[in-house]
Length: 251
Ligand SMILES: C[S@@+](CC[C@H](N)C(=O)[O-])C[C@H]1O[C@@H](n2cnc3c(N)ncnc32)[C@H](O)[C@@H]1O
Image (cartoon, rainbow, N blue to C red):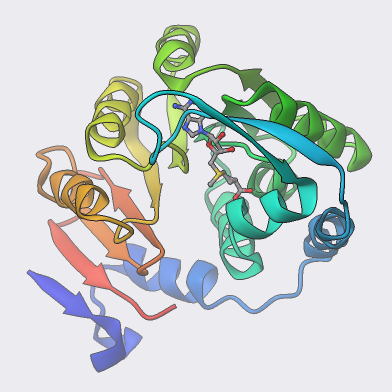
């Protein structure tokens, strides 16, 4: 069954878990000081005209392609919006996941939001383009962030190593290689280290037919109970105590 929140009020929502999530994460309007740290850096990056040779391993390139972009362009076109970055901040701040895995660092803005949200969370983030990852590393230094482990390499090669090395994954954010089969495979691989509390976040679930299929695969997966679709992102929970339900919320 699916529900649209825009046609119902949050008071119609029965599971307390979902009610708290909506009120304390999605609708929380607190102006956290940390937001400014990431957003001031973003302003600088938007003015940065250094050119970077891009190695693109993601959707749209059957094989690796190379091209040049400015830091400003990468910031504008690859980073999540401020609104969604803040949402990731609040998600980490609320659930306090011990281990977070992000596939797709780009310049590190979403990693920075998550790292600042809880200094006890360890953020493992993976970026395939070495030139981009070098700038992300610089950005983490600029923000004095010490709880991010940045790995450079193709997800297909790095993810199995990460899975081997971690005890569990508490939050997984898949924001790179927006293609159907890789997205499903990354999800399946990460599930092997999921606990009852693990949260999966998928970016751009309606970006293409392939991503739409991948999102339906996640929603219908036996391990998944609750899902929340906010259009630009999808959230999947595996908590067994929750009834399988799919919500769409206007965010
Ligand atoms: C949308 S950007 C990530 C944005 C970042 N999470 C943020 O919001 O600030 C996706 C990144 O994933 C990387 N990527 C895509 N496919 C990849 C793959 N197969 N292996 C490694 N990196 C990949 C790209 O180089 C790109 O920098």
